[in-house]
Image (cartoon, helix red, strand yellow):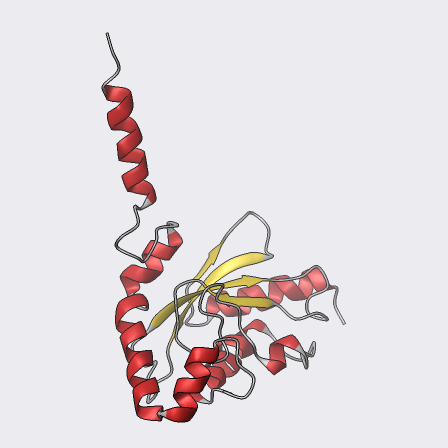
Length: 184
């Protein structure tokens, strides 16, 4: 078996050559973002999420850390942090899996088949069990509000998806205005 760093390079290259948009965070190959589309024929269809991936030094022997950057309404995803509760990533990871598996199999399966009995988002789990139609409507509302291409771009630049908060650009322009009004 090749070294973990060689395997990391191969898996990352394989992901980049697939249909996924990959953006490196630093110069290294351990942290990056991947654009992920919601699976067809699901309430997540049409949604676009920015997924942060961190590869540990021991990858592929240790699982990657996966998190949604823009909001998603799902029982097994923490709404605030974007952390994912997915057994295959968190507990049963094997070096036989690779990054393409995460985006072509594991995440689509997570969205298609939520597990409300092991929730990170208790509200989503309760709504799903109580009223599946209302749950699916809420999922679609979140997709409309938080999972569009412009939301992935906003997350990329560190901007808030809440309209009430100022973006980084708003802060920058405010600073410039203050500097521009200095006393002579």
